[in-house]
Image (cartoon, rainbow over all chains, first blue to last red):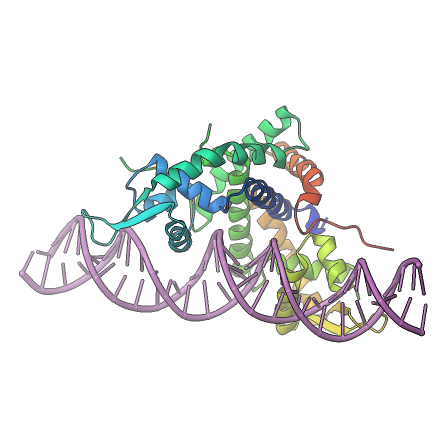
Length: 154
Length: 154
DNA sequence: TACTGATAGTCAGCATACTGATCAATATCA
DNA sequence: TGATATTGATCAGTATGCTGACTATCAGTA
């Protein structure tokens, strides 16, 4: 059994590849220009106003060097704001703009239907089970990547 | 339920992120410099000597524009060869070199142990079930990405 | 307070992935 | 045959993601 096509890593790559393609197709058809990464960042900024980039990265398990470019593009599109923090002059505070809020509201149904499409080969029960197993495997492997998920500090 | 962290697409991204990190860490520790994509390409070239780039892309579901760079790097490392095809002057024939064969032989146990590590949070049964569900979801979504899996032509 | 270490963000460089275009060669068919 | 369509490979451009380095700043401590 050394067929790469049947290894977990390869299946992970393929499923992710399909997930991204479905997301971009659905969102693009709905008239929006937002990537999966940008969507997750924007939704997390909205839920945690004023958070800094490292915290954002931890909340969605992005590498901090990737966040820089993602925020650049959200700011360029007018969906988010980046300001110097008053508490810590190293840090940047992030906030969603009114247009970002509007975009998020209009796009969310599309994003959710994209999630259904990428699971369309599975029954509802199987979809739930896939998500459960992914969550479990991810929790066990969380510290193995450079960008582990981090709970928000309170 | 609009928490991006709990959407299938986000779980897919995280699991793939961990899978790549584990692969690179294990393979790097064993003293090799090969990415998951390069490994899959090399193994598939070995199993299908003389195949062209489009066929290779189809066999492992890569985009054809990605293959160009991957082969560039395999050739630069001396692991694969690329020659003009005699049957079709547009096409390139790919073959594995002796060094590529040696590398593949030495690296395969490491790759297989990496697969176990990325599933370490799951029981053997759960790992099997995760792979079954991924295969099923991928089969249903195959045509939704730009780089679907294609059976070899005979 | 001065030193040391840690942290926030950015950057350069590299490797996937994609879109869309181009070029050369091949296939198809009127 | 000749016009047309298709195909194999590459390229430019863009967006993730990573490693490793760097600057500025902050925190802890001797």
